[in-house]
Each structure stands twice: as C-alpha cells, then as structure tokens.
Amino acid sequence: MKDRPITPEEVWRYLQAKFGGHLEAATDAMQRLAKSRQPATLAVEAFSLYEQFRPEIVSGKAGWGQKGKLDLGQIALLARRK
Figure 1 (cartoon, rainbow, N blue to C red):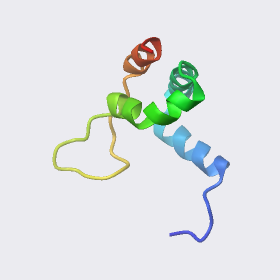
Figure 2 (cartoon, helix red, strand yellow):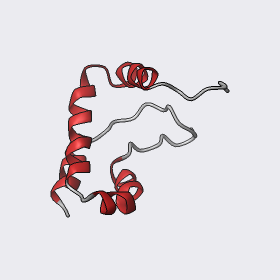
Figure 3 (spheres, rainbow, N blue to C red):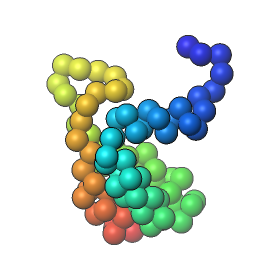
C-alpha cells in the first residue's frame, strides 16, 4: 500500500482506463442522480442508491475491479425517483 493518498489525477486516469469512451456518459448520469437529491438526503441515501445500480458480481469472483455492465438507464431512473 502506498504511503500517500491517491491524487485526483490518478483517480481520473483509472476511471478513463476502465470506462473508456463511456466515461463522460457515466459521469453525466451520476451527476444528474446526485443533483436530484438535496445534499443531506444524498448523504443518507448514497450507498442505497449505489446498491441499486452497481454492476452484478460474477459468481465465483470476489472483490473490486471485476468487469461488469453499468446500466446508465437505471441511474437515470433513480434520478427521476425522489
């Protein structure tokens, strides 16, 4: 483990590598979802919202970094529900 926090630039490079040409669409969808809630409400609901759109975990595999399909339509649907 590194002895320093990860920088925003490192996070952005990681996301670009994972999302490729879909990063802008994914970022836009998540920002619309975040803006659909008041900050205090979002703070309470954030993990529950994530659980509703996170990609499915392939059976037999565990941990972060698995490839999966992020459903931007599901994120948009959650943004419309308040």
